[in-house]
Image (cartoon, rainbow, N blue to C red; front, side, top):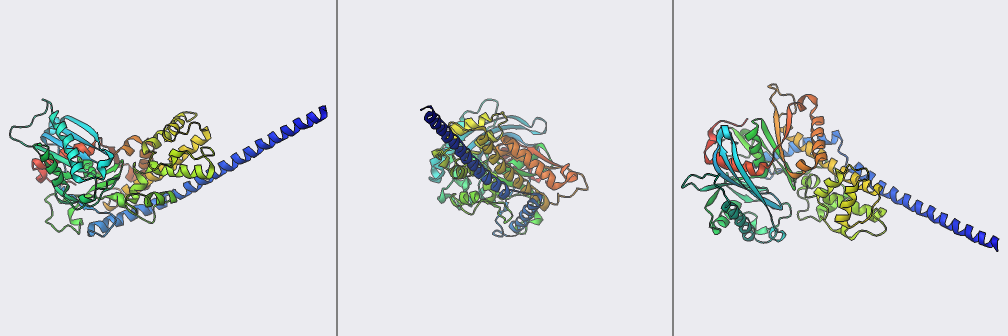
Length: 496
């Protein structure tokens, strides 16, 4: 009897031990599959120095092609009609409207000239309801004009507008526009989840002015600029060596100062300054040298604009979080990363924002507690091991590192086009103004981009290239350009 019981007990222990062994083997296979997905991802997202030089060279080639003819390149290389940037002499009260993505900002600034500069400024952010992004232009611009009118109504006594003078507005519109003058331009296409087809080919300043009139507001749009051009103006206002501006936020773009005679497609008389600000629309850059994965190809195929904005889909806040989600979903499907069943919310496109991604990536706690909290909040994954959380951080790092290094390669391409990748005989600094949430808040991304650019330039040249954060450049810059053009200060010399 005792012998039988002992044998039965031994059998139970053996079965339990076998079960544990099977579980461990299953777990080991699961982690091996997850590690294989990560390893393959790291390999396919790699952006070594040689590849970055190829991306830079391709960017320069596309820039030259875009300057030569209207349809010569994936880069629009749009002539902005901004041939002079703020000098610091500007005085008066000016407004700006900055429409850059899923929200917009209204801003007012009192300028006091060289001595007092910006005396006072106020701004307010407004979220655009999702449904207005694909309805009618009337509905979108009426919503914007109503918000603007409300903001103007809150103007305090500290702001002074001379009697009989109309309020002037600098309009920052961060979408591809065919500029026809400093204060008019037709929409080429929407990006960043906007899809109001009837607006394409229409003058967006006329649309805004009509909406302003419908609100009974006495104000006119005096300058139309891109957010990157606004950032360039704001950067130049505080540092005269600013030559380039980059936006790294919901979307991404670049603008820079070009010599007007180096723009073959410019057929009008050369501006007195000899210079012209070019809005590159670099988000649409595409090259065989870009390290694309199946995740990027699937994201692109399912996007509102397949085949377009490929560079933006690799480097901007709109998309990096979504790439991470797609990778985690595959790991969940192939390696049961979050348990035997796939978390339903992990299958929802764009549920993981780049802000969530950077919050997880920046988690320095020993047990990666923040990562666990975010997985619970976003995907309702209630429990996760530290090993799983570390894998999530690793995925974030691969995607962010690739984006940052590609952004650096793009900047290098611009500097190459301007002849600034070799040591300047005059030892003059080259300042790059940068704005946007990805650059401001994603510390790893910003540091990786800056170190990669230095690595590409080499120590000697890198020492004279300065990346300078510009806060709210797109809002303040538009107001500054409205002021400088209003007071006709563009005749005061060149830019370079």
